[in-house]
Image (cartoon, rainbow, N blue to C red; front, side, top):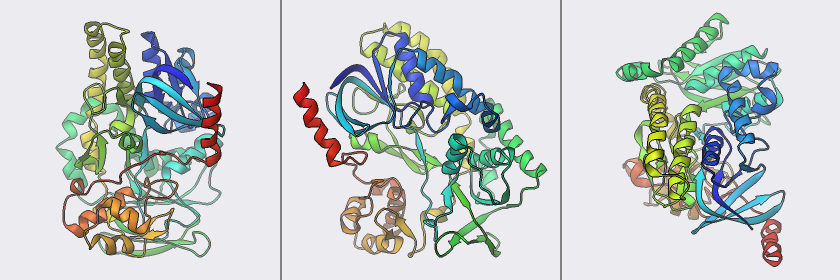
Length: 464
């Protein structure tokens, strides 16, 4: 067992900034992270790649993460990579595994900086080899410099596909086409939110620059795609898509990368019993937080995209605010002094958040992705189809009954890939809002744990 004032889970922009800020107040900090190095998903492998040609390909926003990683390393915070949190008991007693061994950590407070995940978007054929999310493809580019040898198809909407397409072109990759699923007329819905978004004009200009690159490089763009299907025997061989005007097309394909936005990673918060609420503009649940990021459970904070999708800079602000509040709660700083110091951070956060209403309105996913065909596999772990979910939904079942009846959500991912789809199918069948349906009840362990790892807990107690 080890002890610390503050346990931070995750070493992305929010987690690193929280650690840096907490150490400035003299707080004892332990950061656990399931990655091999700091950076999170946004700045993955930034320490080794920022100054290389690959770092230049990934762009300035990626390279800027190196300074934060350097400051984190120099902060004095204890850092344990390759470490997974799988349970927290009141008090707080956290259970983690590292290199095949489990142990406990006693902490006075916890910051969950577990980031976001790509929104699950099941469609026929999405389980075929050769079909990946854009985020997964980008990870391969960041960590291993992997570029598909053949032209790739990208389907989805939002800023990430545009960024990845530009990065892939800069890396020498080839693009067969971009299937833009942004619904027709969505720009009109976003237009009234544009004046406020102009406060974050730099981000808007980046988006326009990406589109300019795609036009200049003559990337084929098919707009208003509403249906998508992948075909193949052992792996992806072709894709079919249909546009809003009814045009149906089938083309050969070796790789298909899909993306329909990101959602907060709320499994840890749910597992700890923290209150969550449905956010219509992002079609997902988010933790209920105060202005500092504290959850309904005293002493547990959420920072970064796990608190609501807003990006790296907003995540850094949220991490700093959580650490500042804890400096007061743990007795390391005077409240009035911290309030003054936090004012600048709160102003920066407000500026970063100004862009979100525009992006949420512009790139809100098409409702069709929440209603896959009956034969589509919803739960990849247990191979449960949408038809099976609908059959159970018609007898009035809730998410947890669906889990018990079909085993959807019982696999290694524990509902991360099927939870929202189950919620939306239930809402559709039962004719009620998704917020009234709820989500799976998340139980420990939060991540898969082997019996061998559990056995090492007894060894730890014997040592103590």
